[in-house]
Amino acid sequence: MARMRYSNPVIEREVVIHTEYAQRTYTRAQWFRRVTRALHAIDVILRIIGEDKEIDAVESTIEEMMSEWVREAEAERARLQELRKSNAVTNDTSYTRPLMAKVAIMSPQISRLVEIILIYDAMVKDVDALWMNEVLTNKQRREFIHSWMQRTLRLGNKMVEIEQRAHRAAKSANKDAEVKESLGDQEAIPDGDDVMADVDTAKAANA
Image (cartoon, rainbow, N blue to C red; front, top):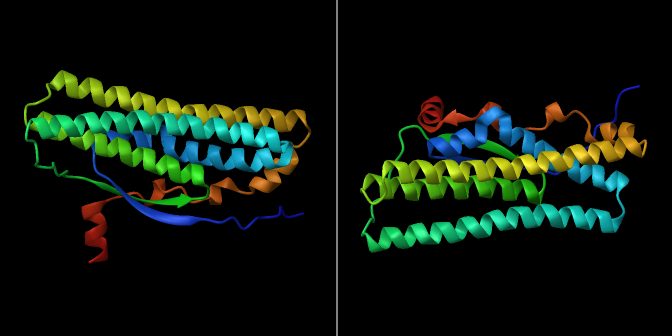
C-alpha cells in the first residue's frame, strides 16, 4: 500500500549570503538541511505524541534558545556599529562570491533560523569593514568570527538533539510508524542546498 503524502504549507524565499564564514555555516556538513528538517520533524512528532502542555514547553524551549542567540547577536552588532561610528568607518565591504539560496520556509522556527544566518552574515560584514579599515587586528577578526560561528552551529545542533529525543519518545509510545507516515518522504522537502549558486553565475545563467 502506498504511503500517504501530506500537503504542507511552504514559502520559498531567496536569500543572499555574502561572507565566507556565513556560507560555511550554512553548508557545513549540510548543517542547514539537517536543522530545518529537525525543526519540521519536531513540529510533526509533537502533534502526534504530545499533550498541549508538552508541545508548548518544547516550542517555548526552542523559541527561547533562538531568542537568546538573537538578543546577544543584536547587542554585539550594536557594539560593532558603534565601533564603526566612533572610528568613522562608513564604507561597506563588497564580496567577490556571494551565494544565493532558495530556502523552503515550512514553519516560523525555520524562518527564524534563516534570520539567524543573515544576522551572522551581517555581523561578519561589520567585522570585515572594521578589519579592512585597521580598527580590528587579524586575531580579533578571527576570534570573533569563529566564536560566533561555533555558537550558531551549537544552536542548530541543539535542535537536532531535540528531534532525536522526540523520535525516541515516539518509538517508546509505539507511534514511530505514524510519525514516518506523517513526515512522508523528507527527501522531497526542498532545502535550498541543491539550488545554491554563486550570484554572478546565477545572473549569467539568467541573462
